Image (cartoon, rainbow, N blue to C red):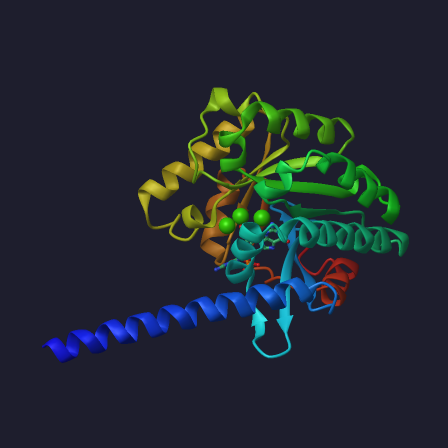
Amino acid sequence: ARQAGENHIEFFSESMSRWAFERLTLEQSLRDALRNRELVVYYQPRIDIETRKILGMEALVRWIHPQFGLVSPGQFIPLAEETGLIVPIGEWILRDACRQNAAWRAMGLPSIRVSVNLSPVQFRKPNLHESVYDALDDAGLDADGLELEVTESLLMNDPSETAAILGKLKSRGIHISIDDFGTGYSSLSYLKRFPINALKIDRSFITDVTSNPDDAAIATAIILMGHSLKLSVVAEGVETENQLAFLKVLQCNEVQGYLFSPPVPAERAQEMLAEQIFA
Ligand code: C2E
Ligand code: CA
Ligand code: CA
Ligand code: CA
C-alpha cells in the first residue's frame, strides 16, 4: 500500500511539473504567435431569422500552432487573459476584423457588421475606446460596421466604469451586445443602465430549448425582456430546424449556429456573403 502511495505521489508531482512545463511552453509560444502570424480570424454568420439574410459575422480567433496544430480559443484565451497577452492579441483581432469588413464593403458586398469579442481584461486599459476608434479609422470602416460583444460578468463587476466606456463607444455608432446572456445575474432594471443594442442568449439555453421546459422558459423570458427594452435578441448555438422554428415563434431576431455555418475562414465567409446562401 505504501509503495502504491509513493508511486501515486510521484506520478502526481511528475504530472504537475509536466503540466507546468506545458503551460510555460504554451505561454512562450503564445507570446510569439502574433509575430509568427499563427493567429487567424474565422467568421461565423449571424442571420436574420425572418429574411435569412446575413446581417453580421462574429470574429472568432483561431491559433494554428506549427506543432500543436489547431488550438481552440477555449484553451488559450484564458491563458492570454491571465498573462495580459489578450491586450495585444485582442487589439490585433479587432484591427483585422475591421480591415476585413472594410474590404468586404469596398467590394460592394452587402453591408454587414463584424462583431468582435472583448475580454474584461481589455477594459482595464484606460484607452480602450481610443484603440477602437483607431482600429476603425485605420481600416476606413464606418462605426456602424462594428459590434463589440461583452460579457454579462463585465457589467456586473465594474458597472459604472463599464457603462461610461460603453456609452462613449455606442455614441459613436458602434453596436454593443451582451454575450452569453442568462449565465450571469442581470436583472431587468440593471440592464436598463447599460448602453447596449443586443442580447445574445447563451448556447446552454438553446441546446435543449425544444425539450427542456426550464430552458424554454428562460429563452422566452430573455426574448420578451430584450424586446421590452427595445433590444435585438440573438440566439447562439442553433443547430436544428426545431430550435430555429421555436425561436421564430418567439420572434427572436437573429440566429447563429452550426445549422447555418460553423466559424469559417474569411474567404469562405466572403463567398457566403456574396451568395447570401441562406436567404
Ligand atoms: P463565444 O463568444 O460565446 O463564441 C461562440 C462559440 O460557440 C464559438 O466557439 C463558436 O464556434 C461556438 N459555436 C457557434 N455555433 C455553435 C453551435 O451551433 N454549436 C456548438 N456546439 N458551438 C457553436 P469558439 O470559437 O471555440 O470560441 C469559444 C470562446 O472563446 C468564445 O465564446 C469566446 O468567449 C472566446 N473567444 C473566441 N474568439 C475570441 C476573441 O477573438 N477574443 C476574445 N476575447 N475571446 C474570444
Ligand atoms: Ca461571442
Ligand atoms: Ca456567446
Ligand atoms: Ca460562450
